[in-house]
Length: 239
Ligand code: ATP
Image (cartoon, rainbow, N blue to C red):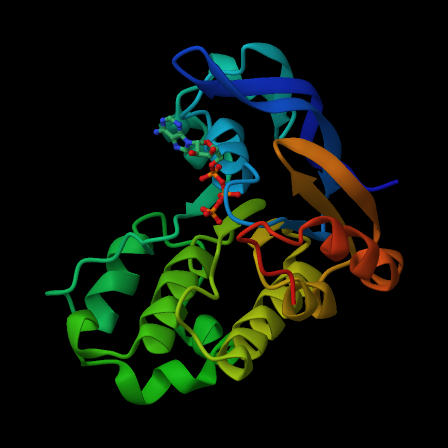
């Protein structure tokens, strides 16, 4: 059995006494892509922030790369091989694509040429300033900056925000290739379930901070309509 890069057990967490996540348990193994799905406000971003050590759990345990995340700083988890790509992509607009990747590459774990092989559409943008790129191109740069660090655990928040489904599919295909090639474990937060499921091995659907559905990507895909119908009247879009 592959080693677990993320293990969550009976997790409760939230903000200043407001409990958002209730009794969440699941794991991500090396080389596995797991989608964390759910409508707006279900607790997806809160989950990622808790796994990355930014929010302390009120109950339960999170282990990142074998270490309890609540006792490690986010910085230390990053040194051990965790990379977190936030929803706002964490880019500096005034830097060029080349400089962004050089900065991310301080530990020089992967040559930028290899990243270009995973994301070939980045090549012609090399000298351009990040701020001048389209949303899809910027997301590609954020992903490339993560890939250059050859993560063992990659936490990806809502890559699809404002992007065309075709662009998201291409980005997710690169994520899938990296998981297969390097054995990176990926937890990928998405509101657009169908696109995410196509690139994932397994999925967890959150609803009101609890696990509403969990299983292999095909099973979750076939049962999604049941969960979706329970979202009617909510703001979520699981299409
Ligand atoms: P979205 O797709 O809209 O980002 P999400 O599934 O990522 O949704 P979260 O952002 O984790 O959901 O929010 C879960 C709940 O936590 C929501 O009810 C939200 O209002 C609440 N919440 C989020 N951030 C904070 C905060 N800083 N302080 C208090 N409550 C918060």
